[in-house]
Image 1 (tube, rainbow, N blue to C red):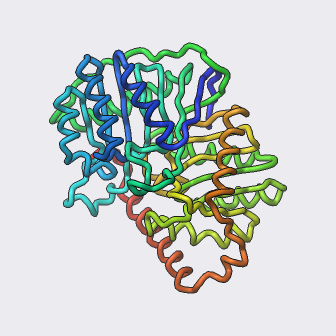
Image 2 (image 1 turned 180 degrees about the vertical axis):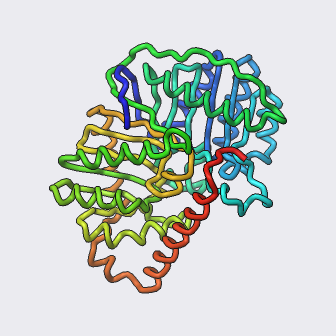
Length: 389
């Protein structure tokens, strides 16, 4: 359950156009410490620009600690930029390195999916944006749709502790090669604004269902409208029932989901649930203007979450995730306005009659993808709860 902390300054950042300049400027101003944790880090123009800022910080004596997922960032780990980062003095760790011999182990889907940066314990960035050029093609006119937030204020105590704790645990898991104690600096926690917010984590220790429960609590308390934008959306039966119950009590429920096929498996598994959702009165809009990577929601124009967690079992039951939740009318209404604008210009509504006329072969593909997703989840969950190999 979210325990909101008052007095924070939180700024919404839309896609890489707003996120990367703010991130690079923050790293350039760092004096003592930078934690960067990302699922995907690509060795492209954006990745090299961020790496250059990190290398310059390390060279002027800033403690730079980079934690990357072994699957999402496997190409970067083999790149010359990765080697240059380490040579410049940055410490880089890989969460569950991806090797062919371990590709079929049960733990392979337990990934570090969060996107979190903390600079000098005073400023954090949290959201769904990976360190990757977010244009789908080099000359595409539209960026991948995604969001992050910057955070300052009392909540920094929790955010800084979360970044340091995960770094410390992964460092310990690598102790035979590179572990050494890390000195923590104190977080800067002075009140600087009026936003009530909390950091929600998902892991396999103390926070197994925190993000899902926050969503369910907000949905069950909704009185007028729920807007969810999510890249990969195949929620549990309980989650779908909560949405249907909201519709029955007069709440408008709007889903903005992936329309372009980026990953076949997730796309068709998500679509397998459309019929039930549409019958319950949920509006579904598929985003086609660019790839949708957002993981955000707005409830009643007052409650807002932005983070890394999709509403699907791999995020909610296996991965390490991080979401910000907040009660702030200005931020929530700004996000809602942005999502509605994107929906109007870049999405098409899925009408029930159109869905009922879907070709049989496509329906079969959807059901097969959902069944495969459930089997993969069952296989991974049955492998136990060990966090580090």
